[in-house]
Image 1 (cartoon, one colour):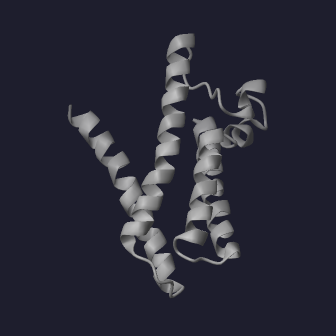
Image 2 (tube, rainbow, N blue to C red):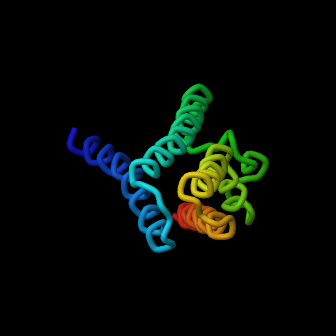
Image 3 (cartoon, helix red, strand yellow):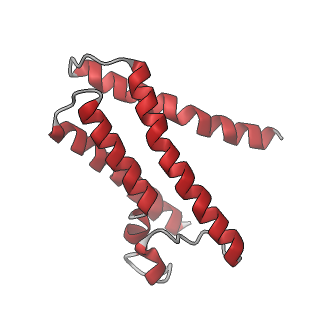
Length: 137
């Protein structure tokens, strides 16, 4: 129970911390936005990832596989393939999450397009690095 509560606590802390980071960026750029609007935007975008994760876990349970990404182009190559981390990073719900964050930063926090796209590219880079490190383990 303690392990599950700690895992749930980590996942519950991510959207508020990510929203706080976006809020700090917004205030550094003198944007007139509130933490609440950025938090709502982040939670909405996170729901997409949650639904995608649930779909992948249901499909893995039905097929009896583990860690298989049914919603990424990585299904076409073996895990040992050189392009596997990149193809696994192109998972549909993750890309939609990043796209929603970029659009939300432009609309909600009035970020310039270049800054919002740079944040999106940075988020994709983090996802890619996690895929590479996960593949090395």
